[in-house]
View 1 (tube, helix red, strand yellow):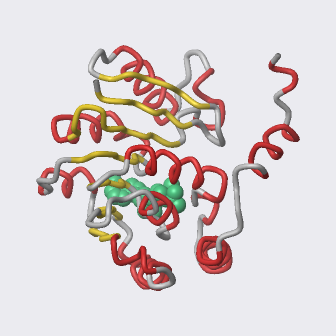
View 2 (cartoon, protein in one colour):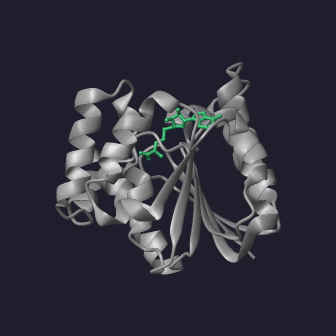
Length: 213
Ligand SMILES: C[S@@+](CC[C@H](N)C(=O)[O-])C[C@H]1O[C@@H](n2cnc3c(N)ncnc32)[C@H](O)[C@@H]1O
């Protein structure tokens, strides 16, 4: 079965999931043209998954940890309630001008608020009840982020964690790379956490979907 899961099949799935979007395509192009580390952007296929999950949850409050250039925040904003909001945390203040520009390209940008600072210091200051949390910042702190938000995540709410396959390195035994070790520990811990229902999707760099029971 696995031999059928080729790059061509992956691309076929992506082609049949993604539709052209003026502002999202523009943000992707602008990120690639102007921002160092542009490969960090969620991009279209993953963005459609985030939008789909957000539409299914129909959240009032989304927390994103790791804004980068605003792409994923806007994808999740698509599924918000009319009074809903995405609160997104970013430590790199130099990204502010381009984030502001990107958010201004769609009315949905008005439903995204970006807070600048270290995520683990900002999160405890937030009092919202989260319906959905997208974890996409410091890889070694994923476990801490879950600890910090879990009590404020409503039952039925989702945690979505990106890059959990860490370019396939999670399969390495006896790895000495601290980020690989951290991701292995995170995945094992999430799988064993009885408060959460886990589902790990092999899309892009691996996306862990965790539903709070
Ligand atoms: C992978 S990128 C986010 C991509 C974005 N979510 C998207 O899908 O387009 C990670 C972002 O997290 C930010 N970041 C890394 N560590 C952080 C931390 N400790 N606190 C807040 N932001 C952090 C980085 O500056 C970077 O912009």
